[in-house]
Length: 140
Image (tube, rainbow, N blue to C red):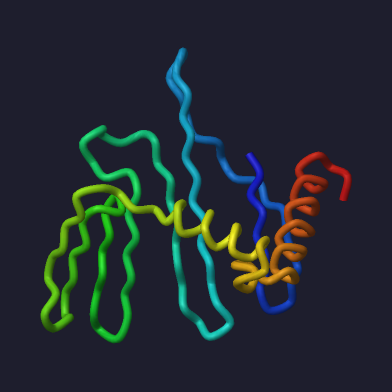
């Protein structure tokens, strides 16, 4: 299995071989991990793991900053450590932001709001996606 690594300072991408996970016969395993490192040293990790127990939250966001922590589980439960007036908050329903995202797009098309994603960012992601595709197919 191949993994693509990109140096965000130089933009250089490298394709590396990594061992593939084992899957039981007749089963499908979809897992992915992405680590994002900003130019000022902040690190973020996104993991999608489909091999855990069904009662465990499948989507979790954890933010560590200035000695404080925020943890969001399944976009429903927010826990906080080190924050005044906030320790736990629960929502009745998940809110992943799809409605707000769709509304921002419609408003931009109508000309009543700026585009939700800058055009140069859209082209940057498209270019990187095509580069990754070419590398995986051995064309680059």
